[in-house]
Length: 268
Ligand code: UDP
Image (tube, rainbow, N blue to C red; front, top):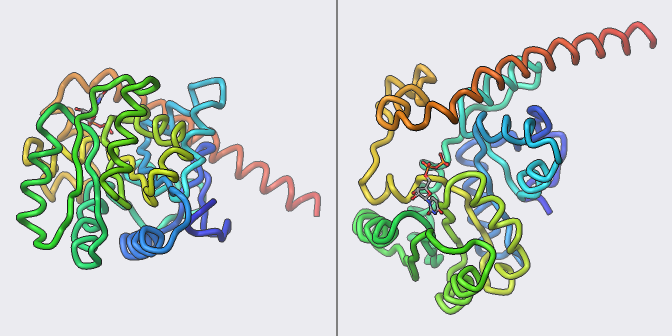
């Protein structure tokens, strides 16, 4: 089930269906569902690397996982550019880390309890300390690190603990695509645990804890966040080889779509 049921507002980027939202409309829908929703809705923030992983997965399994989200926001300049290339532009990038922080601010106002899951031991606690200081009234009702067996008893124990906490919004920061798989595999358990929004937010807790800095505004404005991350975390180079393949795939698909549209028009 989608937070925005209107399929017209969805944009197909290489088989991943992004919702054409803004920070405002996304935040509003998420908070509303956190308060009144009857099931656990997943919010995913895939970037070009994740879309390319879906393309290259070959089995369709990762597409199923990613497209199962109730809301999918375009968290990268690459996705925004691809949407434009396909002639179906989106409103703009919706950065997961910022969206997550905005939801903390609004949860504080609305008294919605949140839970931080992920990161190395101590990171979620540090994130809680910094964010509760920044947003008075914020209730982070539980924290746990992200290093556990994602399919076994440890996972069940994490969900039991989340259920006991009473959290409505769950920040799942296990890295992509592990976090999306974990949320997807546990939709029913999370619904039964009382969670209404499960956000897949990668390294957001590291940022909230103050361990990792966001790219400076200039890099963000130029769409070069990937370069900044690469400079600080050179081990990302291997993963980033997906970016040129993503771009080339988009170019090929864009040409194919234009050709198909022309043929359809000629046949009418
Ligand atoms: N992480 C985790 N459990 C794991 C593997 C990773 O909690 O089993 C955490 C890791 O400590 C980091 C986050 O997941 O805080 C991944 O951050 P990254 O910026 O790499 O996110 P991505 O780029 O994958 O979205």
